Length: 441
Image 1 (cartoon, rainbow, N blue to C red):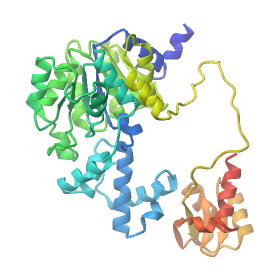
Image 2 (cartoon, rainbow, N blue to C red):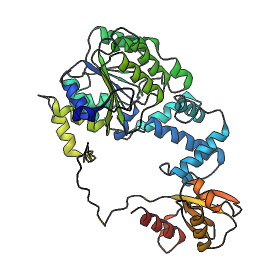
Image 3 (tube, helix red, strand yellow):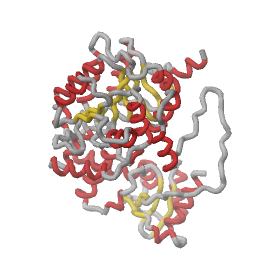
């Protein structure tokens, strides 16, 4: 009973499944589950996700329209940088809200109105990418007949490249793109397995669909095929966030049928947060309709496929073993469940791989370091700061920085680039970074 409660989150309107439970269910349903791969499934292969590209688009708009150096906002992992860029985007007006399903397409079209430029952007992002362990594992399952059909919203050729390596040739996989939608119908009617159908276009296709109008006009033939397939097979969604209406419309249409997803419906989701509202509503409706499955909490696509491979007997894992020998695979530690725990060892010598490249710079009427420290203490905010000739340099939430210096007549509130050469001696920037390291112990 305790295990069952561990698998189901009672605060969700739908079932939430642990990865090991999903792996066991998959092993009992060979060939009855198809896949839908989104951008997240290609992240470990070096291809950016939709979230990454959204911030890339915002960054390009900010740099080109504000006419500033890219270095000043290069670190998109920094919340202060994202807040600065997002504030600018919101000030422009006309763009969808953050996390809106329309955000990606609207920003892509704003940055690159030309279809040729959008194609060039996509080509640059997928150039040189190689299949990850997850793609090779999926191809291994295809070769064994455990997976027959994979749908994709991606442009990359990673599944095809993985199949070419696992099958030792390029003729085993049937790939269908927007240029030849009727080939998709023939493939399904004639059982040409394994097959991959790209719902948003192939990277070689002239019909790439990455703007709002294009996404809304999803190819009718491929959409009908997808909806029909959802009534004959179960579906696993991996690396797909549910941001575009065309795929979500098709999923919801499939759910209206009498017996949708007969093999089950499993939405693989990274992290502890809930997915988008529309995905939540879809999973809740599927649960109420009695569809087996739910939201599957995973660490990443590669680890999930590794778990599936472990439970499938008589697989030819030659290529996977070779891949593991060629590349180092970093796996996260197992999560503690229930009351169980494991020892955590903290070392006193940690390698610093990256350092912040920017901080906040505030020009205001304030004295030296002591006065800055006193202002922060009076405001009761979590801010690290130092006083330099260029202004107050600070790490912390922008609202907290403003609160600490609000009575000091703020004249400028901008970003300051931390140059590497200034870290070679006892500079203000070096002192600020040292304070940050001490505070993060």
